[in-house]
Length: 225
Image 1: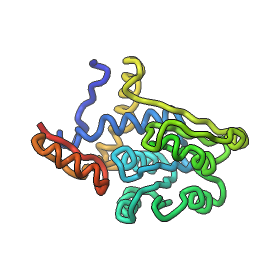
Image 2 (image 1 turned 180 degrees about the vertical axis):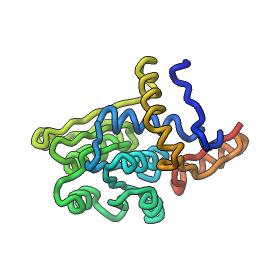
Image 3 (image 1 turned 120 degrees about the vertical axis):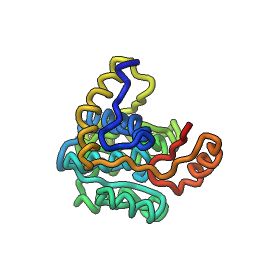
Image 4 (image 1 turned 90 degrees about the vertical axis):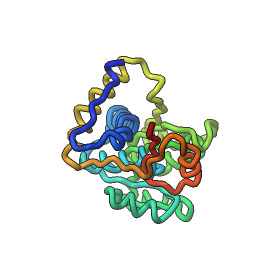
């Protein structure tokens, strides 16, 4: 549909531009349109080194927010720091709840962008600030869990669960319009940079999948045709 067509940003090559639409629209629609992250607030991004994570870090920093991330290696965290994250948590060796609370002087995260779902929900609530907002966009850690709703009530917290692809065409068009309006200028001025880890020709798609399964990449893995 015409409402979902996006121009290649000035100064960005076509292959790199292919890494932009889904991650930019996902981050803008969830972190800013749904959760309404504001300057001065703290955003916690799970999977900070992913395509969505690297975009979320940069957009949040460009618009004046602080960023905490989780990732599975110190090398990935170092890359997240280069992009602007200031609270870096290796989820294999640290408790992200303890770190986020400690590094925000007990305040917690105002917005949490979560791809884990069930596995992290209770801990996300523990790490959440009063009046905080959790946005669940993935279920990598499962779809079913049990939580104490009292902890959410006490924080006056909100939990949103969203998908991008299932939305009506009019909603998608509005997300695309707002993303082009706000995010594209940040890319064209260099404040936000698409992060591409690797590019494979289509006949090497199996190698690209193996790289993704190894989970050593930072940013997007692209296939060319």
